[in-house]
Length: 184
Image (cartoon, rainbow, N blue to C red; front, side, top):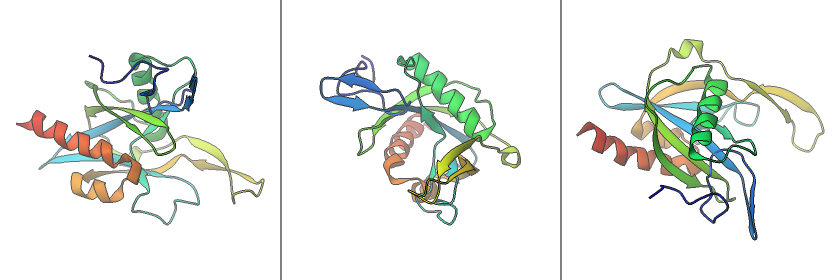
């Protein structure tokens, strides 16, 4: 049985940014990668959101590298490619390893995020994100270019729970259960 329902049903993918339509649902689909490394315990790579809104925030200002799918990217295989592409765009690191589907979470606005997990490591001194254009200040009509994320860091699980944006806490809870089974 598939871990998610087919696209076009109420349980549509959350992470990649693909708009799908059903009689009463429009959802954005995103996909992301949770990279971890083992030290004395698992450490998770999180990315700090870029731009003026997030610059002085720390708690709740981090997340896994992820992004929206294009309209033709609908299958789990497509979404894994979206997750890999977005990871590389946001970190400059090419994700390599064995990717295992971890979970799908749904935000309160209906956006869904599909997440894969893999073990890896990175030299964070080489961390570099792509840039995006945003309006700042809000409703000003002024556009600025910012890094999508401005830094990355590895965190032990308990610290990651403090840093991560609240809607992604379910990803960490699922990872915590997953890693317990893997390490045993």
